[in-house]
Length: 181
Image 1 (tube, rainbow, N blue to C red):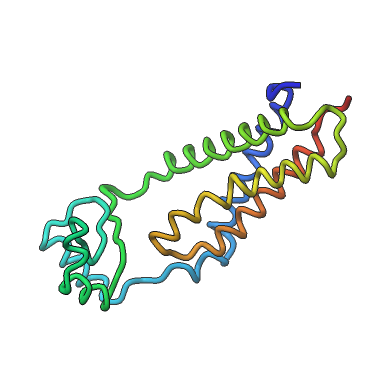
Image 2: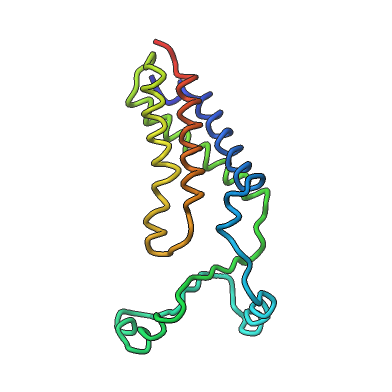
């Protein structure tokens, strides 16, 4: 068996996870508590214009090297406010973002299908396929976030819940459509 024997579960899983993602981020309320408006937003926006902040990623307090990081002045700054700001050059283009998200989900399903085609035989039981594919889905949709979050903290609890849902949906689709012997 090859990954090409799994074209339909790959495509349906990619579409299903994209649909779930859209549902989770547009219709369900569980991501709303992760985000909040900035106090004095207008003043902050005026400040960024005044200082001609370009698009890019900014960290504060910032240090250029290890020597500066060891300085008393830098350590004092760390005791106040720490964070990261990302300024986009333009507003998000919805069509492009949707297309890229769908592409990601289809590629993730393809890689999961490839792994499953290597590990499982045609006629494998529903539970064996579900167990393997869901585990691979958890790796694809949940695990990669952690190293980034360890360094650049942000809330991801609800994204992990989303990832579990994507993994289970992928596992169910592959299990239901697994080739018979």
